[in-house]
Amino acid sequence: MSAGTRARETLVARIHALRRERHAVILAHNYQLGEVQEIADHVGDSLELSRQAAAADAEVIVFCGVHFMAETAAILAPRKTVLLPAPHADCPMARMVDAESLRRMKREHPGAAVVCYVNTTAEVKAECDVCCTSANAVQIVSRIPAGREILFVPDQYLGAHVARQAGRPLILWPGYCPTHARILPRHIRERREQFPDAEVIVHPECRPEVTALADAVLSTGGMCRYVRTSKAPAIIVGTEIGMIHRLRREAPEKRYIAATEQAICPNMKQITLDEVLWALESLEARITVPAPIRERALAAVERMVEVMA
Image 1: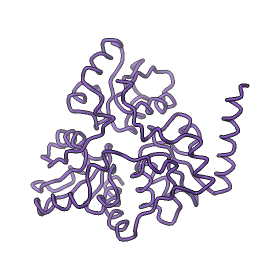
Image 2: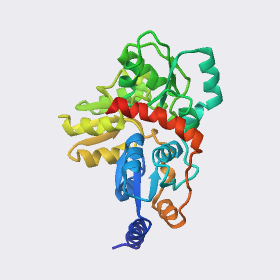
Image 3: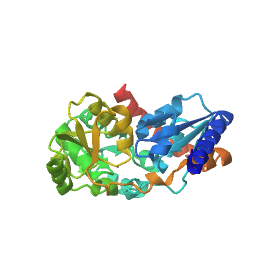
């Protein structure tokens, strides 16, 4: 056994010991480093993990993701200690909309329903009628009475996909995910030429020109279900490359090819095993949401959960 392997095993053993001592649960997003996914109690998308946080019989939640995800967990589990191991891990798209700008748009469209992607800050969620995820956005929008204007924030590409699928006009905020925006149509076409027996799955945060070339447009949870039933021997994956580690666990017999190696979220990659250990040792960085904002944001999240039930 190499010195590096022994050091890693010691680090992992210390994490597990502290997790028990702190009565903690470790949650990891699908885009996290493989080493972090491997030591997590649960791996999934942001909302799935937040619901795990709320339901978990734990005092401490170590959320391996970005800031809005830990914040959503704090909204749903206010009595628990929610930790973000990399305090500066943020989501650029979530910062593309702020509460004051959204309030101005609401004044320009009085009576409009405001649907916000879960990839938003608590302050923005507090200004919205209902939240959505990439998995249920079409269902959420379809439930809004016909004829009512709908503001959709902040992802213009997810919003365009939802508008097409739901057959509803949406007023779109000009936000986007920089990581998914790096995936271009030429990447998909080149991969199809290289791997003609492969199917293409992409995330709805991708550009419309990219989703138009895919065999399936899916949330990360949808991707997990898809690969378990697909007959294709290979899958071209159009999302953040950390997803490939998760898909290999779901259906290890298949080959997975990143649409482009450029689809890396540097914020998601800030958390390593060292940061997880630091969070458990120091009980930092704690993520909290002020009660007035939390109560209003919770209402938007709960309306989404009611639709999902």
